[in-house]
Image (cartoon, rainbow, N blue to C red; front, side, top):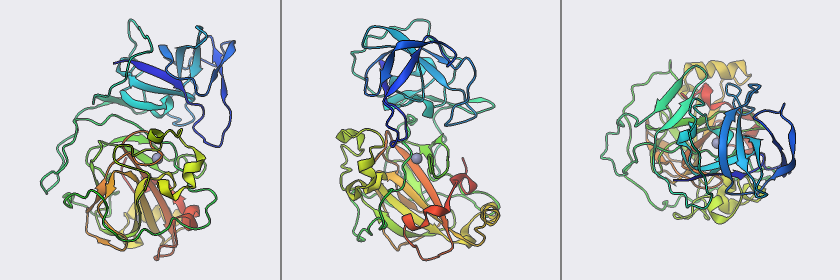
Length: 390
Ligand SMILES: [Zn+2]
């Protein structure tokens, strides 16, 4: 399998910079070359990948160091570009990444920087195919190899066969529809397309602990950056992996189906949009970029004790939390439905503004136990890791 780099540009869809400096080495202290990396360049050969020589921390994850990519450009010349504008796709296991099905910003992946191939031959003309593989996940202290996760504790017979290990992919930061004044319209409670038997998982739980991750098999992909960055957390998982509500039940306050997210082309990228195209965020037919989604209300008394304390420290004492589960393959619940503990609400998917199957989990706090509308509670945006395990 081959691998390529694309110049994707900056992740922020509102940033219009389209040309980026190419340097003679892996750091900003190296001289700039006379040509630029231009957004839209595709299928560039990757010659080498090195961590930033100055150990400059990644803006995305301050615990990591930027990676630089030595690329061959259309003019035949070679040079180094920092990973914040580089998309990678294909088999990057030899570089300490995983197999990446669609071009995704390199900085959204942790890399095992100890890996360096002996020889790199890249012709740039081979079709990329995807095979599930082990993916390295790097944490600040140690490097953890995520292999096949443990058997799920699902009680119902499994109806979805899951590939051994998900390939990590991430989504861009899905921002709230910027200019919409009305909340996403309420979808009539009609049955969704493919539904599976409702499964639950058996998790002993008391409120002294945080909520479990909504999927049994997952890889933590991206953290929360606040209202001006990535406004939720992303958990990568296999397409179709069951998605579970919280361990104390909840109430579905809103669901939305993405009309354009057809099964064979669920994501906006598959329809020719670039990642983070602002048109998507205003388009209800794309469910404002979220794809199929479900919003669940967890009342204050259903929250972990630590979460209640954190809310109080933020000035949100006694408030409730509304949790959006986005980019679902499908949903298996309807609006106004009361959920039992750990009830399945849908399945992991790649719908909307997404580059691969993952859950975008976004939390907003509100004093109002009656759902005021998603955009109305934007100011209550909080880090999901104050409530959910990583
Ligand atoms: Zn996300």
